[in-house]
Structure formats: structure tokens, C-alpha cells
Length: 309
Length: 279
Image (cartoon, rainbow over all chains, first blue to last red; front, side, top):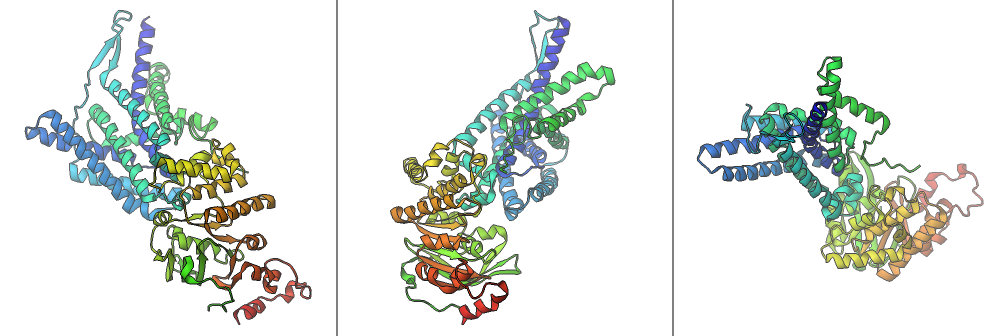
């Protein structure tokens, strides 16, 4: 019974941690789906959103604003910053590169990464800023069944809830709305989308705005977990195996990929780690990704690569 | 440079689309169109003929302004649609005004279903769901095959069905003029005929004006009312479709008929056609 209690705790903790990876991966999927661009800057956007939220928030609280008002205003300010950065990226980075090769666009997002990271820290500062939006204590469940119960982190549960709502909203947006359909059309064929009168620049602005808002949501959760700091940008690297496993074009894939990575690395750490000296957590996700790449290159939920012969 | 004007040349006043002496340069250095002029009548089917690289597609893209994103520029001349200057507008503006291009090579959205493909064509419309639904039925009326395949992914349907999807998608924007680029490309002759018949019906029943770029001269002249022949970025000849079909040079160079006394390519030197047409 003890063994099962421990396993359940590891698994639940892992799954919930995985949802947090999914939050970051979602931003990648959105932009990749709609513009065929692998957005290397997504991690930097989480940092920017976090800083644009926490700094004004701290300032307002210090000025004696009620905390709820400071949170609302801080979120609104951060959303405006994300909208502005979406507009700037469209206008100065992607706009001039319409119809260029995917690799060219990818390189341009690497450039954007450095500018966003540098700019965000120049404007908002480069320390570690603690953020307290969600409870960070733990629940102990099933204390009667298992000695000590199962520890579940409340923050992780919040993250899971938020991710669920986001995914449902995005699925409706992509499948049911005119703009969502246009986004998918642009993803398939820029030139053809342009030819039927879909304004590419507007669509790309919308995509980067949505990805920016997803980054903001990720920043609230991750900022609460780690504090808003530069190392948040490395989440982009954790999102990579999630994307490979789930598929670059699938919103549900990002969630399932996140769950697999989160659960996989925690379970491997606890049960395989002792056998080979530990430290598995940091690279196990990439092994999983490699296995998926070998068997199913488009990912578990990715769109089949359609090629007529 | 403008060729002799044969009788029956359309009056500019009734032209829905008037291209005047445009020059197009790609990448600031490559001169592709060297002064092309053409008119499309309201309700006409005008064929733009010529070999590979003559500048047919470039002319259409210059009109629809898709050329901008291929780093092309209209550096001289003017383009008027419905009496208004449209050079310099975005493709989105042109589609709103009723001029839409069906691109060469079909360009369907492979991961969208046929019906979703058609609906993307209605992106610019503001006249409500009912009107869009009515036009969707209209398109299915002209292309019954698409109705059967409405929920298939466009990437998996046949080439002919893709061409129909591309044309149907353009029709969903409720256009007055369609720029049709090489609809016969890679299709079986029977299918080409089927598609041209439908275009002809759309023209007759919906009053759709068509500017048709084609390499298949025979087929295009069968359905068009007027034709222009492009060579090396210039209009070298134009006239009623009937008169072009009967023209000795067109028959020889583009239809492969006649010229019995000149069997070998050695006899058909390019300077000869230039001399005859540009004289």
C-alpha cells in the first residue's frame, strides 16, 4: 500500500507538472499551426509577459492599491504589452518575410528572441521577482488510505484547470470561427490564402497576439512557481520534447505530450533513477521524444504530411 | 510597341479591367513585362496566350497584386478595375472589389476539408451567413462532385477536383471578375473540357468576366471571346478568338496546324515571327 501511495503521488505530481509544460507548448503550436513558423521566441515571450505583469503589480501594491485591483490592472497592462509586441513582430520581423522559406522565418524568430529577452530585462529589470497569484501550498489526499496521504500541489491543480479552459477555448476558436478557419488556411498556404483575400498581416497579428496571451497565462503559473526570472526562457527547451511527442500542429497533442513528458520524467526519476545514479529528470523527456520521432515523426496527434504522388 | 489594332477591338469604356502598358520588374532587376496592355470586357472571356515564361502569370499577379509578396513591382503603366486605379492596392482590397485570382497549380488548403476550402473564399464578405450559404449551394450546383467530397480533406482529392475547389473557392467571394491561371495544368483533356464548360456556363449565367491565362491555345480559343498573345513580356498579337484561330501564324506556332512547306524547325526561325507580327 505504501508503494502504491508513493507511485500515485509521483504520477499525479508528474501529470500536473506536465500540464505546465503544455501551457508553454501551446504557444508554439498556435504559431506553428497558423503560420508554419517554429517560434523560437515563445520562451522569451513568457519572460516578457511575466515581467510586464509582476513589475507594475509590485509597484501598484507598494503604492497602496488593493491587491485585486493591482492584479487586474497588471494583467491588463501585460496583455497590452503582448499585443504591442505582436504588432511589432508582425510589422518588422515577419511582415517583410511573407512567402519566404520556413527556415528563414525560424531564423528571424531566433533574432526576435534576443531582442525580446534583452528589451524586456532592460525595461522591467533583470532580478528574480516573486509572484503570488495562486496558492502554493499542498493538499494531502486519501490520508485514511495511505500513510501520509498523497501530496498534491495546489498550484499544479490551478495550472491544470487553466490549461483545460485554454484548450477548450482554442479548439472552438480554430474549428468554429471564420478567423480560426482563415488561420488554418494561412498555415497551409500563405500565397493561396492571400489570393482569396485573407489579409496575412492581420492574421499573423492575431496569431501572435493569441500566442502572447497564452504566454501570459503560462507566466502567471510559472512565475508563481519559480519567480519571474530569466531562466523562465529555458521553458522553451522543455516544450520541445512535448511538441515532438504531441505533434507540432495539434492543440490536444500539446496537452497529451505535456502529460507524457511530465509523468514520464517524474516516474523515471523515482523508479529508474536510483538504478543509474539519478539525474534522469533532465534528459528523459528527450529520450521519449527521440523514440516518438523514430516511430511517428509527425507526433502522436500531428497532422499527417499529405503528399500526392 | 503596340500591335496593329484589328477590327472589333473592344472599347475601353465598357472594359471592367483595363491594363495599360504595365512594366513589371522582379527583385529590382529582372524585367519580366515590357509594356503589356489589355482589356477585359464586362461579361467577356479573354484569353491570355503564350508559351512558358511569356509573362502570363506575371500579368495576372500584377493585376491581383499577389506579385508584391514575390518581390515583384509594377514600375510603369496603370491598372484600372471598374474605372478605378487599383495598382498599389492589396490582394484583400481587390477581392473586396470583386476581382479574384485562381492561382496556377490549384493551391488548395490541403488540411482543410473541401467545404472549409470553399468557405475561406468568403472571408472578405460582409453580407451575412445566409448569402454565403446560398453561394455555397450555387457552387455545389456548378460542381456537383465537390458536394460529394465536401468533407474530404482537399489534400486527398484528385487534381481535377482540386481545380474545381480552387475555382469554387474564388466564386465564394462573389466576384465580378476571375483571373484564371492555367486551369488545364496537369489535367486529363476530358477534365479540362469539363472545367472549361463550367467556366463558360458561369460566364453566361452569372455574368462572370474571366481573364484566362492558358498554354492550351486550342482549348482557350474555343471558349474565349477575345485573345492576346504574349511573347517575352510583350503582347505580340491580339484579336477576336475567331480571327486568332484562323490566323496562319497562330495556327502554325500555337496550334501546330499547317505550315506544310516548313516542316523542319530549321525553317521556323524566330526572327520570322517577330518580323511578321511586329511589322
